[in-house]
Image 1 (tube, rainbow, N blue to C red):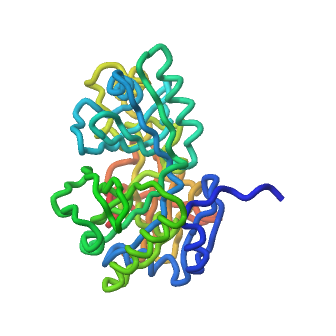
Image 2 (image 1 turned 90 degrees about the vertical axis):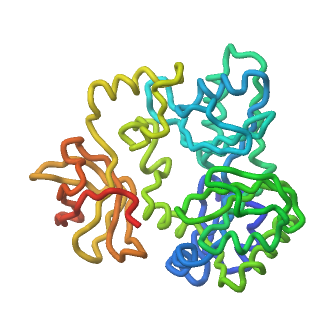
Length: 366
């Protein structure tokens, strides 16, 4: 039997709470707890939930040329970032395919990047490749030092405010503050992957520190019926909001424009890695686009890899899909021929030899 994957500092807590543990991105992670994915999903939509996302990667960029490096590495315009602000971005290969999507934080004297867990080694190798020939750049992988909790939902602010003197209300979306929560210094970021009000908490410390912070948040959220949430609810929540998942909806075969990420792709800025082919794709007109679609009958579940059809021919493939807990109907995302990408287009989902009608809709679904 091969060696067990890595474990976050919250692993023993997950086990004690009866979590179903699965291997994910090299880590043993909770997919759901005893009450199930639906309970966790509704807790976040209606009140508050807590996620251990310590498997994510964190990288610091130091040096005189840190900004110049980020401008070359990422598709968004990092020069627009002020201290205390965060930015959603992506980095691309020279051919224009996506290496990863990421968050970029301006920490004042350096930048702090948050990358996907499954991509840490690949991303770091790519960063070093892009940094070649640039001096005064230091790329520090601090992934193993950091704990990361996401506290998400309408009651997340009320929950966390009990544990910190830092005023949370004034922290705008995609902004952050340095503060102390439950006695531990941390970066308090008004971000998340659920589409709800929420915070992501980055802090150092071992399993004891992690347990104390977790327990303090659970106690503070008890009056709001806070639920621990796993990867299952994380996926249903992000799908309802139409957020891309690396490895499903975006990867090195997709460019940011066809993935609907034109809003973060600043073609007007000076050269960045992948800019030329991305600009050329725009000029020529995109051949396919990532769309959201909603099934027109109940209990039909669109799954990754299922094919999408229009007028008797295949026009695309499902990249993410499932039943929306809020809408109680099948929803999905997939790349389709550009000609079939308009909102309102009726397409067919092929499921085991049968076809079911679905409508292309504007995202988010919820």
